[in-house]
Image 1: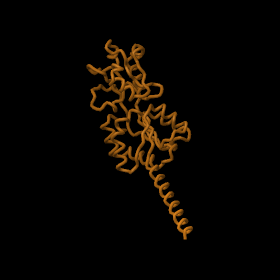
Image 2: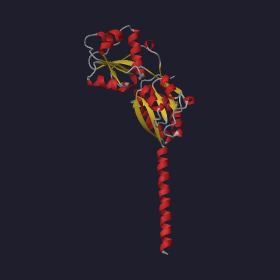
Image 3: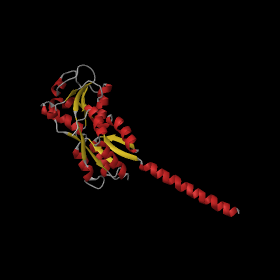
Image 4: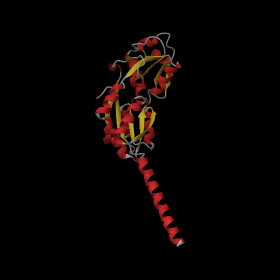
Length: 251
């Protein structure tokens, strides 16, 4: 009898352990791991809860510059999706097996804006030549699309060489804005999508190449369905309305 009871208890323990393991696996599959360009930091505060409510998937987001995230993906970083600030880095992430090139979509277009720590908002890159601007924050043009756009805007107005000694280079566009907000920079050329109600002046769209926000699904984490669901959601009426309110143009 004791052996029989022991056997029953052992079987019950095995079944319980299996049930718990299955539950954990299901819970893991509900999490979508997203590599996101830093310009999306504010918009995702609204997009993620709406996505979760609509689909049941949760999202774990890692922010950074698009170039750095693309390289991490190429090296096998565990993400289900990549939201790049331009098409080029999304394509780079898709060159190997990390991301699915056929899944690429452009779901929004970004804008850059002039912002100052204090005083009157400027309207031109030429205004940055003024003595009151000793440090001007931009993201690194080498791997941050918004930094590249800022450099283009200064070149467009013929003032990049004169402003180069004043530039302080951030790792990503969110850090560039933080420097302006803290006073570590007197002004910046940053993503309009991060500015909320803060005073700013938009840079002419003719001064830089379009910032095509590009999404691609990836394979590193294994939640293919979650990545595909997020891709579909970004094209929904609800997501487009959020992006429009967040400072993005819609394609």
